[in-house]
Amino acid sequence: MNLQQIDLIITKLIRQSRSYEWVINEFSMIDELKDLNLDLRLLEFMGISFNLNKDNTLTLKSRTKNFKEEIFCIVDIESTGGIKNGNILEIGAVKIQNFKEIDHFCSLIKVEEIPDKITELTGINIDMVKNAPALDIVLKQFRTFLKDSIFVAHNVRFDYSFISKALNNCNLGILLNRRICTIEFAQCCIDSPRYKLETLKEVLGIQNIHHRALNDALAAAEIFKYCLSKLPYHIKTTEELISFIRTSRSKTNNKSLQNSPKTKENG
Image 1 (tube, one colour):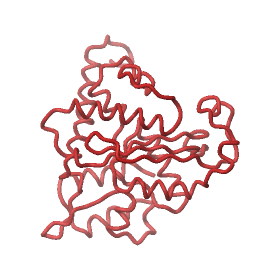
Image 2 (cartoon, one colour; image 1 turned 30 degrees about the horizontal axis):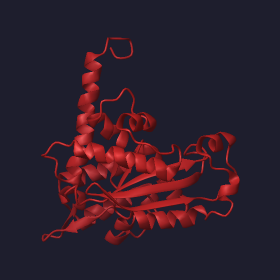
Image 3 (cartoon, rainbow, N blue to C red; image 1 turned 30 degrees about the vertical axis):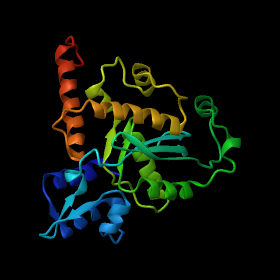
């Protein structure tokens, strides 16, 4: 899945409303969607929703929706390896709206083998998953749970891409949900020596078991809520929130480079 291609379409939709034909045509050019009979219901099923305007153009709901009314789904997965060769072992997620937890999701997934190092890291062994549901069943359940909420994760590219690839392999489409990375958000709002989940938990005093999907999702949710509480007052909509994270993080990184000693790597 080419996230850059999807992001380019979204960027155009953030700037202005577009016709139904334009929206369908643009998304139909994505490789994984070429053979699908796309319509607004199917796009919403895959995570992206629109408002229909009086002039029959379409506007991203996230452009106008107040972030306090938005549903954010904070997600974490445990896996047997990387995206190319690994399998999803567990999915955990918690939904947040207006700083409050409104729902949660958690399931182990049946796999054929679990590397020893993964068992040591997560505590999940093969006996724990022998009666677990198959991947396609869990993904269908998770897709129903996620709906068109904003996908949030600590290092979001990993979880988002892993789940989207797995959905596509199970003929369940791909993810089109807007996404937020709590590492990037934390870099805008929290002064910390590092931004790993475990470090931020220590900084904010979050106490729970590490390296299980739901627990890590709950920890990331606490980080996310803390960062939301630090937003400037002028941030109102979901897209303004996403833009704030992107631009503020860019400014922070540029400032860090300017204040660091010059080396061969940074000029």
